[in-house]
Image (cartoon, rainbow, N blue to C red):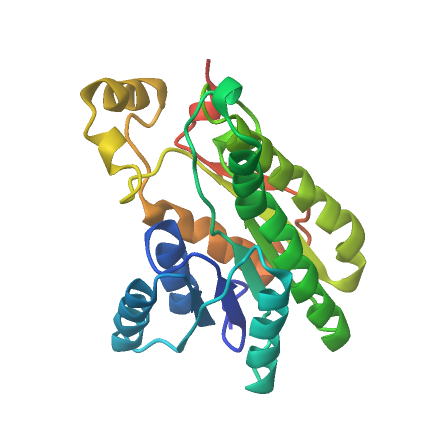
Length: 254
């Protein structure tokens, strides 16, 4: 056993039927964890489950609304009924909405905040309760963004939510560290995913990213794997309340 070994641990990764979540789920599985895939699109969730299962990993799948506390409680109760407890929670699921704040409706604001921030609180709190009851500690990993520290036009609600994720992570650490729960966050930079592909294909935006980022490239979902495994493993047992930016150095320069 090494300090990065996750054998015997169960990891729930929300929004893991594709993109960043799927890459992190595969990385945690490669480190030995049983992974619990999550998504709302049943077809994509089935495909992701089949893909990891075919690679020989121990994989479960579950679908529930991350903004619905009753649905969260039922999902965790169903897992508990099957003898599965979450040792590692990755709050990855989220959404983006690009619109000037002056035009943003209250409903749109609430939807972005609930999906990106409130869900992490609701699921994190319920998982933490189970962790405390079991007395074995655990790992909370929230997925933030560059927007956890800086802002750009047209993503005001998202920026507020991801800034909240950073401070929520610190609050989790402040209250739960004494129970052996480490709460940290990852702030991905600009990553190539299905969602961002149109931006990659835009010559002007692509040029801005590659010129603005010291690494001179976009990130890939696989670039997050080392960080998520580290934060999920015993290697980070005295790391708490931190956000690690995986951004190719973008935030380090003007």
